[in-house]
Length: 285
Image (cartoon, rainbow, N blue to C red; front, side, top):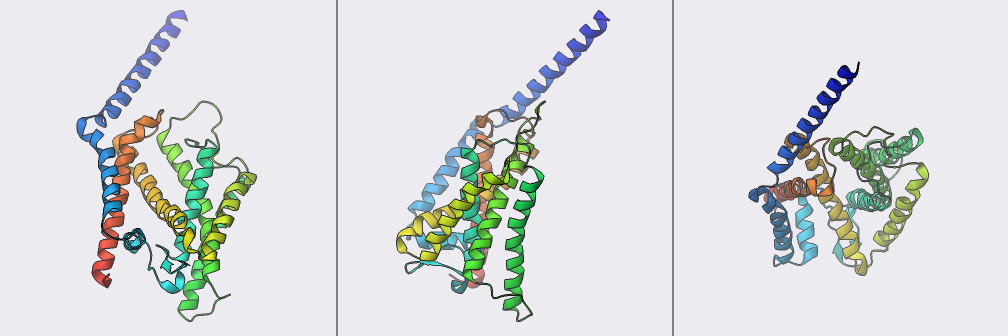
């Protein structure tokens, strides 16, 4: 019996050492000189965008050309300046940004469970409200029967609600993909519906700023919404990068995803740049 236990312990220890060695090899692939250049390249591209000789509002509007139609009638303005996305998209991505900030403050990065059933149902309803208003708005524009007249207010509000729903979902996906499975109960991204009160309140304040259309609020509105676009694309790209690199389920320290995260950010920049270039080459600037 003792010999059997000893053999099992030796096998288990060997398996752990082999897994640790493989994880170190995978992590080492990103620590070569070329890999370490990726964070600097991402920063350089961002600085080059900021230094380009155009007013920042104009550059943001051009950069978001592949995200939405940028129709003035579907957009809010800050003073005389059109926001860099239409009202629904401003809501979605700013709602995402504000909720993500709240989740990070709550310490939910790496959580492997989305939440309990009431929370999931509520998040699904938030997202469905945006889908419902979007369908209703499309029916209105096509001259088909519809339930109500969609406005920029309904687009903004339902967009914010969907952004609140998207942020926990992506945090959960990233936690499941990146972190190892724990032996105990998994932490929830949103522990109860009550935790959504903070992002809901933040989004309510944000909506007031947008609807006031004051020039002084352009930059906080624009940066929260455009930043949300970049982060959403980068998080989706990071899921793919982790899966392809073999780091899935093996991230235990934030520094392990520094280089893969920089690559994901570069992918996000590339997607935005290509889609904007295609749109403006077709429609003209």
